[in-house]
Image (cartoon, rainbow over all chains, first blue to last red; front, side, top):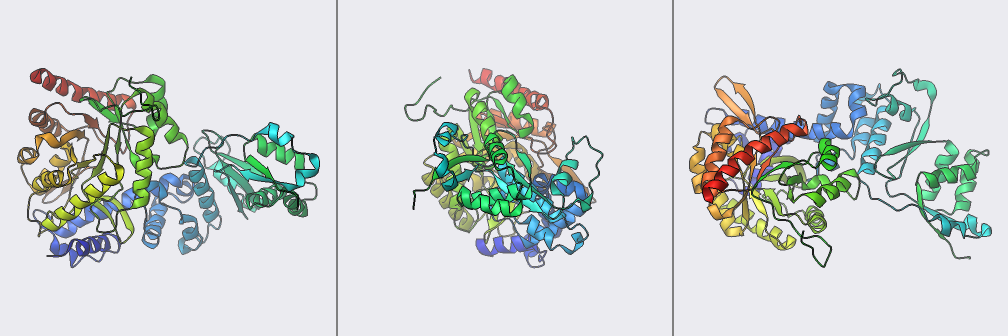
Length: 260
Length: 290
């Protein structure tokens, strides 16, 4: 009689790896052989995990079709078994998996689309935050502006790709009214994913804007962030960009460093 | 409504009426129309996030209805250490929503840190009995409250089990001092899959331990040598399950009863119709008790 731990390890191996010859000998056959009974669990496990993955990655599912998605999910779940009892955690490394998934090599943008969808999923379940206190910000003296450090909304995540992933994402929304065409040669895109209220938003960003937010997210001062951003885009409309991100609640708090 | 000096929210007991599972597809309709149902149940893990629409809707639902938290991922029966991160999330959720009941499954779903995210059966042995009873005691100690344990559907049995499932369930409840969430559909599904008498199952369950019942639909896989029933929660409650439910009410008395529907989720009205059927049987039982 196997110890409980040995039994559980053998069961998991039989489901995940298909090494079940010894394990099915532990099962009552009855009307059905142990193999058939084990197959029910194998189906349940992969169907529910694939369903959970597909719910987080509807655009990837749409781009590759359900059959291929199931094949990719199977490979992913074997390489990255779930490590949480919460199905919402399934899929954290799917973008990394897709990047090196040989069968998806002809779709070089797929991993970046997956990264965007994971950011969307994280933003959906992320923490709330009150909007930025404009009165206090307005009270900061102009000569201290370059010492400001801004904090991004807790749900805010920056995404960038060599491919037009925002347009791919938009075109593959079920309610999209466009013609469904995306020119892959259109080049790189950057965006900010965040959920300021009840709805997740994806804001397209210029290169300079992306660099600015990337610096602010990393905790640099506004002065340093501006230097970096103007290096990318000398014509960046800094006031316009800051106002936009205060309005969209991308920036929710700030502090002013003590003078050195 | 009662109040509490601490956080303005006390647990509303779950009434001996039918309740329904709260699903994302129905959030808007539920808060807008406030349908007539005794209570709502949610999968605890769906509210483990830091924020977002699910928690926001649950706040609104909780204002109008008693709430039960039903866990699907704690993996009580695993021989891994208890997942403290999972338990911490559950404890915070309990503190925030003050549920009338908190339940989990009498099963395991992870081993070696890997989660299969399925409700896997334990062998019914003295070793498993000791192990899982101890784990439930630990869990209740950590949460500082009673939990209910639910019997799961199963598709296989272990050769070395030494007692029938119902005896195992009853003994766990005694040793761990927990309540029982009797899933009537699961009893029926397992009874067909393993050729046992579902009425004998009911008779072995201690009346005083049953705090809640579940009803759901199953699917049928046809094979040459018979059917295997799959507990998929994606169909109306089947007639033999209603019949078994009637027997269960006769034995256990009027008990809070949940209509579960987790895949191919139909319009809210369909769930409410199923709940009305359960309520009709509950009322008949109430009348007989009175």
